Amino acid sequence: MKLSEIMSEKSIFLGLKSNSKRQLLQDMASKAAEITGINERTIFDTVLERENLGSTGFGEGTALPHGRFEGLDKVYGFFAKLSSPVDFEAIDGKPVDLVFMLLSPEDNGADHLTALAQASRLLKDENIRSKLRQMNSSQEIKALIYNS
Image (tube, rainbow, N blue to C red):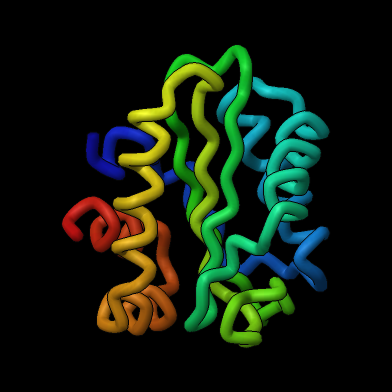
């Protein structure tokens, strides 16, 4: 599975103006609901529940919130670039401005783990993070994510 198989240009959100981790997750849940057909509140509650187990903010201004959902037919990936960083309780204490959210079918652990690993690899690459922060179009970001 490649990130290009779980994303489209519509799953890239630029300039989100979230003021907190909670609002960011809510904003992304709202947009993800439009694409997946899963209830916005269900997405938010599930991802927040996972965050309560431990922050998915894994450093250098990045986070990888995720959750599993009954009724999904495949893994969905969403990328957000925030207009200004928010505190995400990341392991390095740095605020987050690049977020990759994954929503997976409840019973598909293998694809979920594969997608998590690919998104994590993408966000851990210093060169890619730098390029993502400089880009201002979803087409450019899509091309970078698809070709990385």
